[in-house]
Amino acid sequence: MQGVRQRKGGLNSMAKPVNKKRTEMPAQDPKVRAHNFNEVATGYTEADARAEADRCLQCKKRNCTEGCPVEVPIPEFIAAVQKGDYPTAFRTIMSKNLLPAICGRVCPQETQCESFCTLGKVKGSEPVAIGRLERYVADWGREHAPPDHTACPMTNGIKVAVIGAGPAGLTCAGELARLGYEVTVFEAFHKLGGVLTYGIPEFRLPKAIVQKEVQNLTCVGVKFALNQVMGKALDVNDLMKKGYKAVFVGVGAGLPVFMKIPGVELNGVLSANEFLTRVNLMKAYKFPEADTMVDIGKHVAVVGGGNVAMDSARTALRLGGDEVMVIYRRSEEEMPARREEYHHAVEEGIKFLFLTNPTKILGNADGHVNGIEVQSMTLGEPDRSGRRRPVVVPGSEKTIPVDLVIMAIGTQANPLFTKVTPGLKLNEWGYIEVNDRMQSSLPYLFAGGDIVTGSATVISAMAAGRKAAASMHEYLQSLKGKL
Image 1 (cartoon, rainbow, N blue to C red):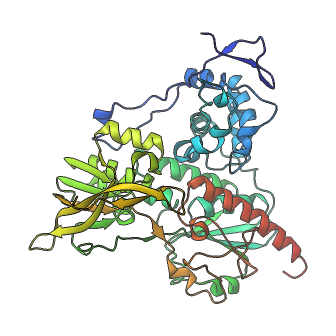
Image 2: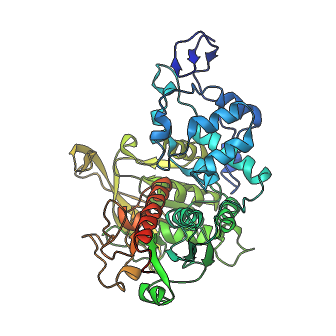
């Protein structure tokens, strides 16, 4: 095939042609996977990975690295894959990212590193599948690379607390441990991982992979305290009394949001948070082997258009829903979910009602959901987000029979921790205010992730945790002689 020409440092040399199309990711057949919780994408083979790595142009200007929130040296690790040197590829990624198998699966690479890829700028060419290669290398490392117990230096004796074992907290903890601090992560749940464990379904991110990657942190000295609900079991004053000199808060934004419409109080109306936590953390997908169950019924409506809505709909389908529909008030074009997740949902048989908005949830005499009233929308002028505002089409109301309604329209800050932390400045939405160093109004307290920004991506939370760790190190070093 006549393709893009490759040379060291850029395009248009006389070297071998480069395939314009990326190597396909092997996956389960949609008709099969719609009925199981096994991982949808089965991963590259070694031949797939080498073929995809060979597409990388090894540009002098590392645009892709600039597009990575945690600054993984992307050309360097891909160069190692090109040579079949997987130990070097793995070490290169781990130098910046302690959770690569997670990132390779759930990060929106298409809007980050891959959107900066030089090859992707060439007409008719697709960017290098950086995320798929990261996943391959991470999975290789999990199977073949021994834990690196030498990665953590001798402790400096300074204790630091991290609140929340989600992506922001785990990243911050790992970076601080690498700098020699004695780090303890306090987690409210009985499992580590935060949203990685309770929010993302098994078929997208197997929990065994999450727990294995968390073990990487124990290898660099991080300690964990589970079942610790901060704001109830402990507060920051308790931590300071216990000798912790700085605190990072990465508790996420887990308070669910419901539409303000009649019927949301009915049985059979769940937030996506509750639904996914029941299924993922409490193993409802293994019922009756596990104690927790979810009564799906035959007809399920998921309200929303983001990744959480896709996860909820695809989970409901796997739990036995005969008809699962996603109701979204804007068009397909405006939907914020990753294209890959949307396409997978369509392949599996999820129905999409675009330009449709719920107005009322209906129930039977027993107080259980039996229908949802919706109205058609059209798109008007752009709103503050830049997306065209949905406008009601008069007289377009209709009723759809449903047995379960899942609200996946976002989350907000949970005040459980913040309300018992005097002097902590919050913004008008209840999120923690920080400066450009991730430092709050309390000098010793730093924060990052969804509790600062609102709902965002896993990799952006990790970037915040990494940045906060560097700032905490600077802060603690400035106190030398006073600690």
